[in-house]
Length: 197
Image (tube, rainbow, N blue to C red; front, side, top):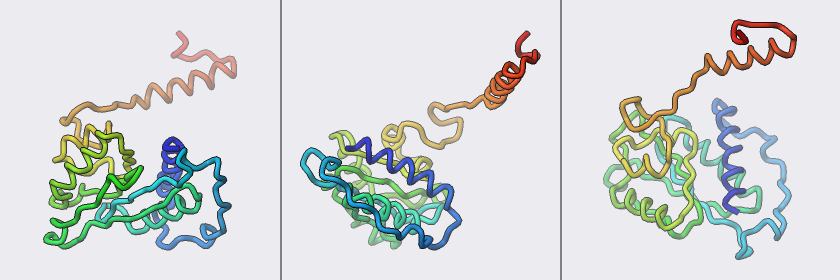
C-alpha cells in the first residue's frame, strides 16, 4: 500500500512542477473521482493516514498542500491531515505534531531562503524516531533542499540538494548522454561518427 502512496506522490510532484505557476486550482481538477475499491485498501481494510507538514517554503506551499491533499483524498486510499508550522516563532516552539498517528508524513517545508526557519529540535527528534521505527516519509519537491543544519535529515532523505562541499554528490554527465543519443541516431541511419571510431 505504501508503494501505491509513493507512486501517487511521484505523479503529484510531477504535476506540481508542471503547474507551479497556477494560482488557483483549475475546474477540471474538481471532477468527481471514483471511490477506491475495498481490495485496494490496506490489509487493515482502512485508508492510509497521511500528515502533510507545511508552513514555509520557497514555493507556494499553500497551493502545493491543497493540491496534494485533494489528489490523495480523491483516490479514496488516503485520509489526509495537515499540520502547519506557526509563523510566529514563540508559537512554533510549542508546535508538536504526533507523527506516530500516521502511516506517512509528507514533508512540504523548505528553509533555503531563510535558514532561521526551523522545526523545533523536539520535533526534529520526533521525526527521526518515527522514521527509525518504520514510519513513512515522503519529501515533496523542494523539501529535498531544506534544513542544511540537520544532519539526520540528510540521512533520512538520502540525497538532498546541497553544495558540492557537503556529503556525496550525484554528477550528471550530460555531454556523454547526448553523445549516446547522437550515436544511436547515427547508427539507425547507417552513418559513421567520431564516437564509433
